[in-house]
Image (cartoon, rainbow, N blue to C red):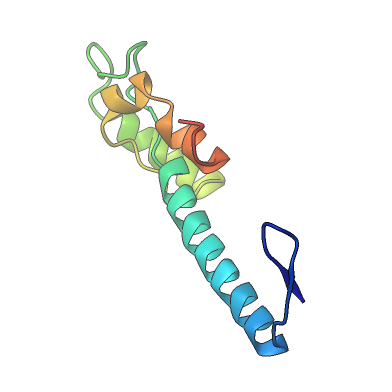
Length: 99
């Protein structure tokens, strides 16, 4: 049995119930994949504001390589100034309305 917002009982087949579970799981897998990609983009500019100015020119590349071999495969340091000023990549996986 399913329930409406008025708490009316509505018949539901077992197939409909499992189809709903399938859709929910597929949506959650997609959201997790998107969240994982966002979390792999990091601010590694090598300076306080993430621009890389006055830092070693290969700092971000070398830091990503080191992190990739030790613990975080696939990490990137793209758009350092953006990732420094925005918490969207870190907060977005928390859910809607959190960014």
